[in-house]
Length: 174
Image (cartoon, rainbow, N blue to C red; front, side):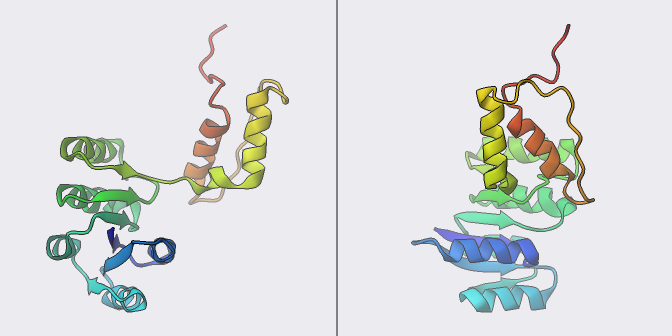
């Protein structure tokens, strides 16, 4: 599998390191609006550097693209990658608006490619343990949940509430 990475900052580096551990996976392109970041990541993995994701998609035709830019840039890069024939792993939050997210999902359906995002907090052992206790009914039915997060992690909190309470309905009517 040939992988392209769009956005070579913190999460782009995390994605690259993960792909590099997989057999039969080759990072072929790294793209960032900051040329030095793209060049640094590309040189680390023996791939080509780009500052224009459309150019990377056209010239390399990767099988998979990780979109690791800021949320406001997800839709354009994701839709272009899907239309270029790649499956896409897009960092969360999926999009800056519900309309953009719907366009991304519709494009994935239209072109028959996978579009995914990953909420890694679900895999933390204490979260898995809590979910098991909730699923088994050990804790009973939660009546109140207080969620405290710092500014950029509210989406993780919302996801964890949904993940841990999959059997519970927050919309029960008396």
